[in-house]
Length: 556
Ligand SMILES: Cc1cc2nc3c(=O)[nH]c(=O)nc-3n(C[C@H](O)[C@H](O)[C@H](O)COP(=O)(O)OP(=O)(O)OC[C@H]3O[C@@H](n4cnc5c(N)ncnc54)[C@H](O)[C@@H]3O)c2cc1C
Image 1 (cartoon, rainbow, N blue to C red):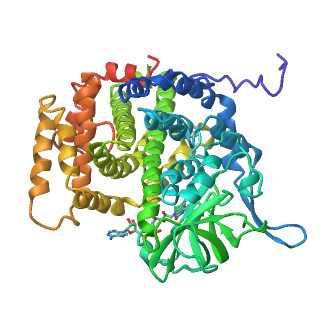
Image 2: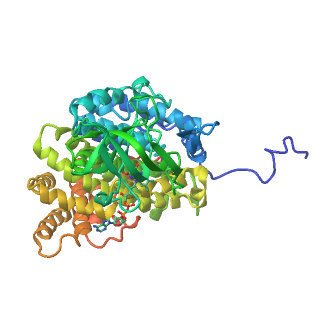
Image 3: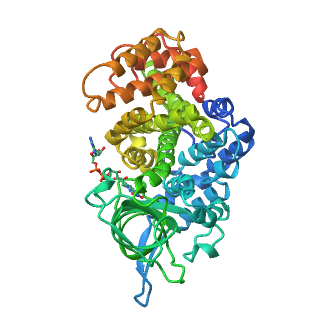
């Protein structure tokens, strides 16, 4: 019989046993853990906003923007056609769509525009939703959110720059900040000879005129080796004056209407995070304003780093959630050996293990968001937020690459193919662990938080003791952690061990209190009680897999 259509009616092209396309995802409505956590941590008032954004961010259209923004990576446009140095970056239109979506939905500034309890929780939830689709734009969002407390160090700078940040109309134009509808900000700390160790910075600053100190103009010269989102309108940077390492605000344009001396040398060719430009920059006679006290630059910029570290934890939780959603969808529709994959006992174990990891991560970042908000007026909460940000950043980011890889493997071969989006999610995962303080540095920061703030450890133990009696393995871990903290010997060598125990105890405590027994029992049994390789799919045989999978949103 003649073929009707030579393209679609090929006899070998009957397509069976493959999942339907996922299509538009309602990222909030399908996420029970997020819904419960948002309300529990005091942001129920923002539910409609978060739910509405979850519907928008999860559409196929936005997913395609993310795909394109990553496929067509930004390019450096160092010069204009007449040879003038302009230091611009050209982005695919899809990137601008994503930036517009983020800024018009208040992603960088929701917490600051809504100063009430739960604001950082709702803020975190919004970021978590977009991060499931695209991580690159979250970098400028994170920095624009996190810079605000640091700007307050010098009121004259805060008064000028904060209102610009709080605006919600995306404006991509490369013009002076004062003329723009809204702005974004970045941060340059890392130099070639030292990133974690910023005291190794070699960039110098000298007063421009007679005035010195906070708010005074300075001229900087030196370089920065990692400058992400270099198209931002201003940056916080560190440089040495005669009094030590100090913090400066460097605008893209100088007050005299000329471009500032921010020379982009090249864009980095990165593993992932492709939509986001990351650059190397020479600072040549760069004009800036001193922010905070002279010689106290690290103290000033650390307020910003706390916020970006919160974003790293959120970002990795988001990547895990989206990887889980994709794996659940695929395995619900694909059969092998006469059964849907999701019905195969061993696959149920793997998927359930991925689900409890994702729930533990989401629950922890939402709790952290509440501590950050309450910490603005409560010292105990501030101690928990300070310590907890380091714990959450370390552990959630550390768990994400293996998690996303395992979700990829649930797809078999198609998971390795770009169109599945798993490769992009996977490539995105390591960066959250590396930037804003790599793993060891973050664990050392846990020790620093404990050492500098005597209230931090008691506050942390009070937090996890709330779950005492909920699961014997958790009780035993809390006791071991107490012994570990009193044990003699070098704390620095044990910093990862201590941080990991704290993270597991905190996640376990939150799940025991707030998650269904199926989830908390599986978490405590697999992660806390007995040998654990860290891989996925080794939950005990008596786990209530059906309950866990149903909660995670599986179609069974
Ligand atoms: C994609 C990307 C974008 C970035 N964007 C920015 C940006 O916009 N602005 C910016 O300022 N930076 C940025 N960074 C830089 C990033 O923050 C640094 O790379 C990171 O802080 C580590 O610094 P480093 O590369 O100098 O590594 P190093 O400081 O040399 O550290 C190397 C390793 O040694 C470990 N280590 C360091 N000290 C100790 C110690 N005392 N004990 C044990 N181990 C230790 C670290 O944990 C790390 O694993 C970006 C990085 C990446 C990958």
